[in-house]
Length: 97
Image (cartoon, rainbow, N blue to C red):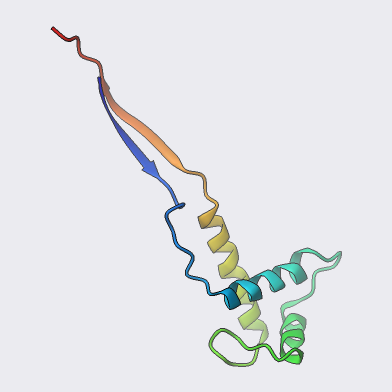
């Protein structure tokens, strides 16, 4: 018996987010998803600036920074949590003599 197994997985990815980037993404998600009425990007950037937080590159927050962190973080989460794909092909069974 011989066969070919092909496995496509995202479980081998190492997170390249720093703890600070993950913290910012989690905070933004809380404001966008956990309230009855989500808070807008501009208001979130104002909150972060009042708290003295900086973007990962060290500048003050603007609404486009918040939007970018949220959007790219969602794409990253989807990629990491994607289901594995397992394919079995070229199955051959031969009789032994």
